[in-house]
Amino acid sequence: MADARIAVLIDADNSSAASIEAVLGEIASHGGVTVRRAYGNWASPNLKPWTEQLHVHAIQPIQQFALTKGKNASDIALVIDAMDLLHRGVVDGFALVSSDADFTPLVMRLLQEGAKVYGFGERKTPEPFVNACSKFTFVEALTSSGSDTGTKQIQRASQAKLRGDAKLVALLRSAVSAAADEDGWAQLGTVGSHIANQSSFDARNYGYARLGDLVEATGLFESEQEGNVRYIRDKKTR
Image: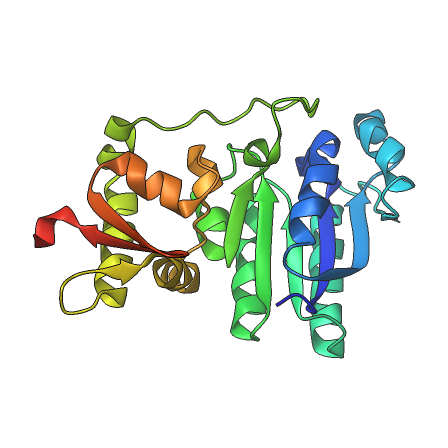
């Protein structure tokens, strides 16, 4: 919802500073950002790219020294703050910026409390974290052709690759079936809502700007346009 209050919590050790502008722009489509925090050891030279972005985007740096080698104190601090914000009731959702699967239990706990969780990370992000979020978007999918984010853009998946993704095909066919009328036709918008309610799917992670573009690219569905409403039907039902 547009008036949702969202806390943006950034794992600076496991995310790219170059993509933060695009990430914040995407988060704005889900609601208003009321908290912006980035966690890390700011004495580390590895975080220099982040220090240049903090003031530009009004992000509060949360200092966490590496007290024990091999342990990430920043992760713990982020989790504590997330739970504090949750139980204070000052936000409606969370945007977690990280490519670290260690946050998967946190995501599941936040979801149990009814909070939306939007995840943003690089394509290397492990599936458990990706799948746990209400919606997960690869930062490479947010980059425009003219942007300099330091990340490789996602190329459009071919029809063969889309069809070969059994999980994707099952998701699309299941959503269409659930939203279809007696003739098998389903409104694309309803299909999209059904998918959003059961997975972290984002068509841009496959290189397509919209769900309709991806559906068409699979070649598995036929479509009809009536005014501003687009209908799709699984070719298997004909």
